[in-house]
Length: 154
Image (cartoon, rainbow, N blue to C red; front, top):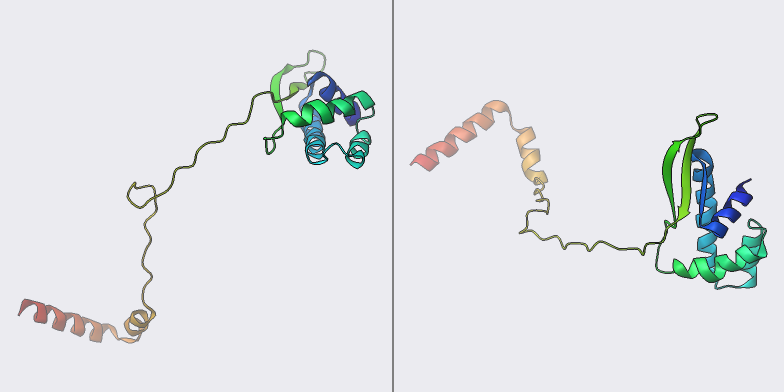
């Protein structure tokens, strides 16, 4: 059943089926398109694709028409569009189709310290100060703080 759906998808470039079947067929179809892209049209790659797609004409279409269309796309060759439920058993239906739009990449902004998008780094506490602060008794720490205030006021 999956082989027939994948073959129909490559033949018609869109198939209407249930959600669950569409999600399963999507992974098989994308794997075959990737194989066709990387296979360079070799015999071994065509034979691997022919294990799933049983029609030689569709295998030829996959390697000569569909794979070159997605040469610049890193993945995501198919799209699932949900449509209404089926009348008979109320099963959720979807349309599985091959993407026709070219891929567009977003330009990444360079992060700088001045634009506010960078997260300020906190300075780590020095281990010596932490050890001294832990070893002092609270009374001694208060006395040391009092002496520091007297020195600043003088």
